[in-house]
Length: 235
Length: 309
Image (cartoon, rainbow over the protein chains, first blue to last red):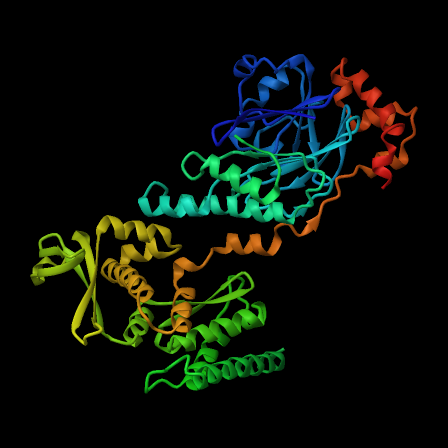
């Protein structure tokens, strides 16, 4: 499975997952104009797009994809909030824990914990390559322990210690910090997440959606590498 | 139901009482002369019985026995009384916690060995306030306040003085000064503080500066760890909010089954119709048809083993 991160931040999110037969995009936070500039983005190869939740950094360019006839998969709540035409054959309503197939990929969504109704993460299996991937961003924790995962793409938004310092310094105000704590993954909670996972088949961990003010990419990478003993990539 | 609660009360109470008398025996804890831990426990329980959570249910029913025992223990170790509003019991999910008020903070600091007194005052914009720093310690030289200066809208800061005796039995002062900006920042961290602060700004300023002074002072005191520990555990800032409780209770608990059983079991190779129902994408996009079909074949052939185990 190939993983390409086009954008990962609170401004824009867009990821590409592909195996030798199927290519999907997760999140529509980047415009096609920007995506076309990426050499590994080929709109004609995109089989579908998945949207995790309705916040604009994940969904605002959804209509551009629809214009190209790419089917968008999202939960009912997300479709409601994005004012999608749910009868359209380009809009597929999905439910957590109900599997569906896109080409050679089998996908099962799971609920994530975010300040947004109908937010989900994805468990993606490539049947031809026999690889499994978990994608979860914008969630302050994950309810689940996954099995036999080869790739994790997990949000690691902020370090609680840096956040505390920033509150003291007045860079982050209290109400924003409170919101962060109940909507985004902290390094400390990500560490707990990986401690609980069974990582024997895992090949690589991708940390997504790092905060500009409250994160230290190098430290995040080292801490997660220390815990898991696996290669870690940070975006 | 009421029977159940009484039984539960007595049991928890006994556990806490035993623990406290053990601490007393070992000399780990000393109570002020006029403080009776037994009476404090009983009055704490009267308060607890009337404490309700967000859903208007009694906390004695909704909170865990351990957290109730712990909250009570923390109260008594600090020598505080909920009847005097020195401490409040607040449920976070199913965990009860004891939160100190600023009267409570003052009472605890006064209990520390060597502390003589702790006081706070607010500074208004037309006050004459002079301070100096001597060997990295703040010293307040002068604070003059006219009665006419008192105006809640013109607070510029607040300070707290803790008087104590040092090793040579000489009187010393620990001083904490905060300007309005720092106080506002501290308020913005609290859940309800900001709205209360607008109504009673003087009290809130004093509270903030007392809390800060107390924290610094307590951390550098030589008093029993038991007391210091209890002190920190019932300071507001040390309590993780409900979000973190939710994380502790729910995160990484359930095993997620990522396998896709339904199709594997029901579908046999030559049934593209069922696939089409699950995959309307194919109707829309022509070129996707081939890889999807190919995948279907592979799925039933080579790929069976991973789903079989």
